[in-house]
Image 1 (cartoon, one colour):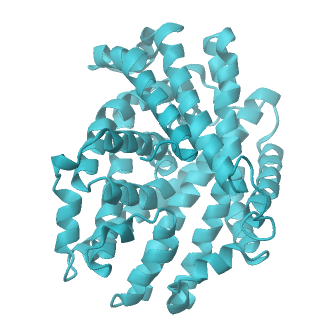
Image 2 (tube, helix red, strand yellow):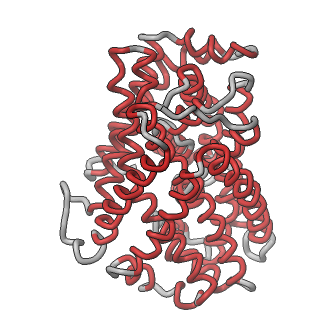
Image 3 (cartoon, one colour):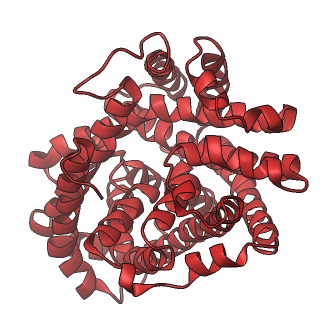
Length: 449
């Protein structure tokens, strides 16, 4: 078995873990949900949940990783032999997500190029549909994104993931701040800014709470095995609570700034029509190019935005691939290079199937879903909440919260350990179960949230 690498310092770990958490969900899903569920009201609920629910789950996963020094595939079995199956389930989530995440990363790569080359064409209604339904071009851009992801993981923790994160994450923050400042200072942006920043508590509802909780869950890369994997590379000298708070701050700041950048821009472009903000995935690929096309210096602003999204997508895809590769290395004693190439080949094959599911195989449906939509449903709406819920149950009732508290306190104090114990045993699993049930009911059209 290979010797386990570690991050060279606290900054490298925080930026890598933040890079994992910051992804496509922060930059398009968060603004879309904020717009749909009351703007400031959604933002208020999200931040409240981030400092409670999010903190507890992230501390748990990082502590499990550092305590066991293993990937999720082996970590749960080391903590409790009867719960080793949970490690396999946790590893299965990134295995499902990796191919189609890289395909969407390929779409972002294409739009980064298209915004520079011909923004006017990219802003046309038919552009996105025509692109994703073609057979060859999406596969080419998917291949480019997959190759970039694979190269970073081939170099390992120190030379690959840590170095990439130290460059991309500060760059991502600078671009996000710059674009946000530009947007909020444009004439006509004030109504969108007010809608986003000033909570209207009349719009608070169970749906707002559930949507914010679901977004938090997916945004922070929880229950995917990623934070356990990164925690296994964290030095015993580093303080877990301190690192967790900084990761959460970075993740929430990027999501907040993405909303501040996108909502006023689209609000202004649409003349205050909220439905323009509620278009889901097409917000990024169809609505925003139109916004950039109408802006002064729109090509430059649009290119910077898609570079930003590309950075975020790349750091997240790297973390997803690393979670799988780390498990293979731990379980089978395989070297990093062959393990990475095997997973990349699998990702290329299934990702190509997902891409063709928008074109020549668009007639193929799995329980009513297209190929990519089915993988997204089964991973995000079923397996991811299941892993999170069972992780809380295992910690709360099998290995007990004290085992995590002791790991956190191995080099510092854990001031909120009483709150942590209550959250991980009772509150967190109940609410994750609510996400699981509501997600399934939503996907089949039984519940509309």
